[in-house]
Image (cartoon, rainbow, N blue to C red; front, side):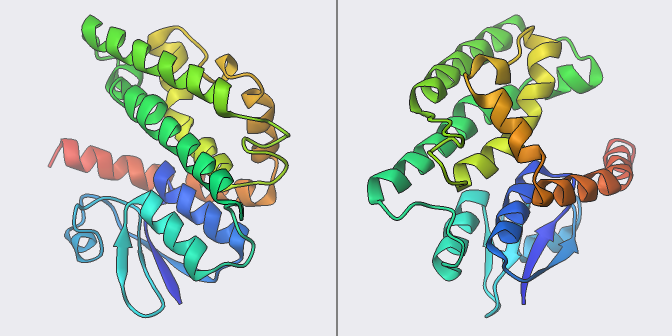
Length: 221
């Protein structure tokens, strides 16, 4: 059986977990944190998530895992059949990752711990987010999903990639990033109402205390 390595408080872990659940792939979860040396056995960079396939191969990096799942488990596809449509899903994922999630992650210490951010960093993040928002407004269809009438990897990725922007935007940038993308607030509500999302969210909440303890241990060894 496929094994998913990581922890339930990780948004990237939950992207893969959500995809597995949507596709109906049987898997087991192995809780391991980035501070645990054993993670390096399955993820050479020490990042989560990682998976161990049915035949014992180890894979890491979220998008690589998602691509593997689509190829290895074609049932309940989360990518369109049309090649251009598939590329558009990947394009939206890249916009979410590079311009929205990774950019706002730079301001996470300011949002969580009240650290005063460098004004230049705020300027850089704001400019990058603005490019991402403009691109997503151009690329997204919201009929009712990002790429049409069917749930795709873009929607799953978006749900969890928007977690940090939703935190950082109002607290540090003074902006609601989700609201700036026309149609996204309604989509986020639709995605949150699904049974898969509810299960993932429940597991995430259950893992919060243990995750925060790991953070405290890293800060005070």
